[in-house]
Image (cartoon, rainbow, N blue to C red; front, side, top):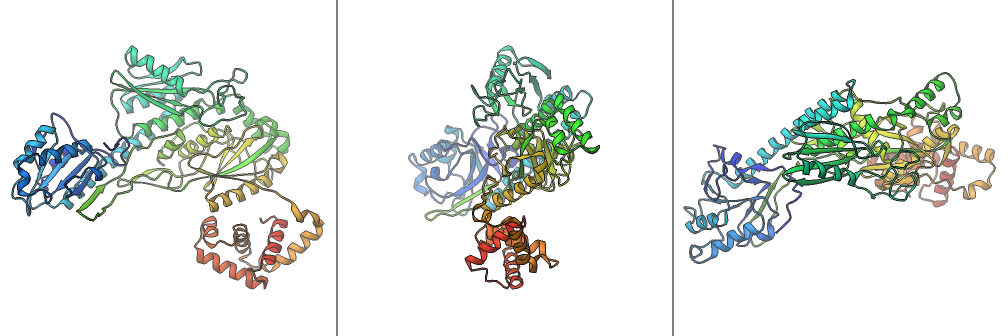
Length: 603
């Protein structure tokens, strides 16, 4: 049987479809909806005698009986037909009356009763397209209700996070929204705080064990979560521990999540039922609790505040850098992958030779995965939250701040059954995304800058690719070099986006350029590029030329990197060639221009 374990559509009760008076549908066989509710995941039309190969499970299969001749009423034809639908996981069968059959064959009714498959009579006035459209509409309503529930829940959680007692308030709000019990486990596995009605003893013990599955090992020397068994905190080995785990014990649904604060705390949830959106709501709580219990709440937060004050009072960047946890750093520029938070795309129809094949589906599956993924489900209406002092340490004038938990990105916003990418305008939403990435890279020094998240990562922390993000990484730098490192990371990110790479580090290879005296190289570069830099369009032309050369003259990848149309790239490069009076197809010219751009800090 096909595996329908992860359908891309929200389930719709068959009873809701039968209640549509405009369709006139009638159940004539199979278990009654009140006795055994039937859930539909999509609608599918097929006139094949054996529809099994075309079913995924959970379908309302629609047929006019073209495949069933009058002789099929005798023998085992309909028994075989219905058994194959049930074996494939079909949810129900809709039989269209007319033009092939005047009535639903009695042998088909008897077969559906024997196999427990709901049989729906579709009247002549109702087309299969109308039934499919109704399924789509019901799925959109379910998805919209789910998104509204998630949005309201995140607002309640954000308000709770702004209370004087934020951790108990968030746990209380989470328990109310999910209708269960929520508990925060300390790094040693003891219960730190909880809210709601706790489950029975067996389920309670199982939840405690489940939290141990996701709890990272804690380094006794530092008190922080180590990356894996036998590893030092500075060495990260991805995948040694899952970020979440789930189980069902005695009818109680259990879920455990690792918090991202680096302290080894975990969140446990026990509910009697699971509903669409539960995982997303829990993910929002995980992000908020990570912010509230993470490192930024400890004494290092006071150190960062001290660093910020000293900077504002005129201290040099290198003087305050030790307060922030190190003297050498790498700058990381990160951008959420486009479409990473998009949900709710619709299916369509498909055809096959040898029979009529149609499919109708709607998306809206419950998002799953890591807390950093579910952070994107926070809408832009929340308020409150614990956000530490902000700062762009890569500012040209030196260290510009200290450790903000803030980030832009794709924030899911409820529309008519879809989630679309929007810029984060709510501080809590932005903080959730940035904090999740900061926790993954083991740094609390995070800053929102336009549509890019900037992070300062200490030299002893390894920067690795992160799911759902594109990263550009600078060379290792001291505090007085962070402005240069910021530029390096920005260029590395541009290249990563253009090449669709998850992570691109800065590359600084001197080569032949080091053989030329610095002052002579600078003078030559300024003269060579003067026709570009001396025009009002100079910055745009210079950046386009640099990107185009770095991508080996690729129009499409340059357009992607600069977020412009490929024709715009062509026009700018043609303008550069005219102003420079050079043949840009000549490799010698390209090489000379590239060296000049590098010399002037444009590459």
